[in-house]
Length: 239
Image (tube, rainbow, N blue to C red; front, side, top):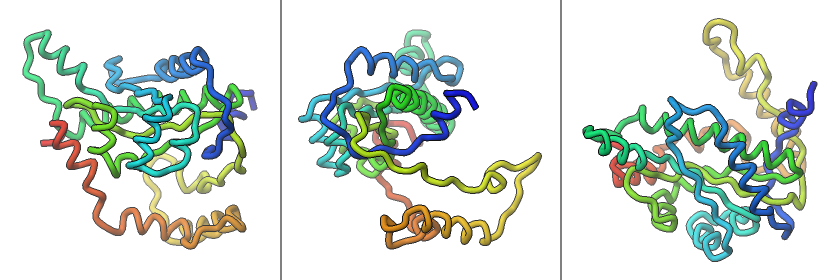
């Protein structure tokens, strides 16, 4: 196993940070490493808002109160961005038509690939972070704080900093439950029950009041939060 693979397999989210600040040139290096990721047709359909001031972190925290946002060195918000596409289409005399699922998938996947590279680069330097996707629950409010124009929308953030504490690596589902040869392999509830037990054993004294599968039921057992859909309509990205 080489050093890179070992680093990747040691990943654990970091939500508690020291007061140490990330040097700006170091952060720029990480972001450029992220931007080197593959993307759809080299369109690079995302932008990254770098939030370093405490005032702006507090403004975001007011809408999504996760302490990692307030206490990190830098908070990076990844934005699905088709605003540049609008300019390019207009430049070439075209009829801009950004609304639809395919555009959302393109920009979301581009951003996610870049973000994973950024976090991995940070971890390689002894720093850490946590992805925060819950900002989509306040999609319009976050958009306003960040002054996001039409054809852009917030996807997730990464809180970055020097870890004050590191958690153990969280166990993943069994390889055979996720990686399937040739065709999709249907699985019964045995897999779910077994992984509930794995997660319970991992959490120990930190165990939540719900099991892993119960948290999934809370996510997908009720109508979705309408915030993202409403904001995507507002930003002219859904028909």
